[in-house]
Image 1: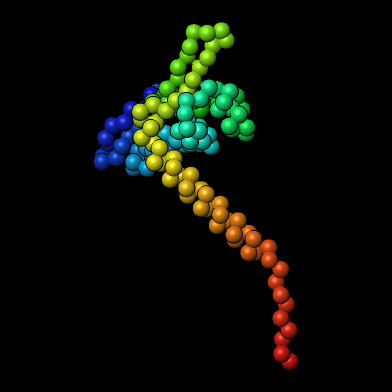
Image 2: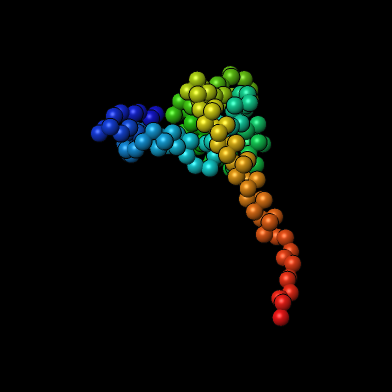
Amino acid sequence: MLRASMACGKVLMKRKNGHGEAGCAVEVTLGLIDGKWKGVILFHLQERLLRFGELRRKMPGITQRMLTKQLRALEEDGLITRTVYPEVPPRVEYALSSTGQRLRPVIDALRAWGIEHRARLEAASAASQKPKIARKRAA
C-alpha cells in the first residue's frame, strides 16, 4: 500500500518495503503507473471489468507471471479491484476502483499523445524514404 505524507513541501511516497522517494505530483502519479504494463492494464479496464484470461489475450506480449505481478501492484495501490467468485474453477474479475476511475483522463491523454506521436514518426519515416531527384548542376 502506498502512503503519502508531506516532507519539505514535497510528497513522500512509501511502499511497504520502506523505500521512499520525494518528488512532485507527477512523480507520484508516474510511480503508480510506472513500467511497461500498468498503463496498458488500466487502459483495458476502462472498457469494462475483465477476467485474467481476457486481459492476457488483450496483451499478448505479457507473461502470466508479469500480468499477475502488475495486477497485484495495481490492487495494492488501490487502482483496481479484484473480485473472486466461489466457483469451480474460480472466477476472478478485475475492474477499476474509484481511484483508478479518476486516472481515466490521464490514460486517455497518454493514448492520444501516443497516437499523434506515432503518426509524426510514420510521416517522418515516409518522408525520409522518398527517392531524391538528382539535379544537374549548371556548368
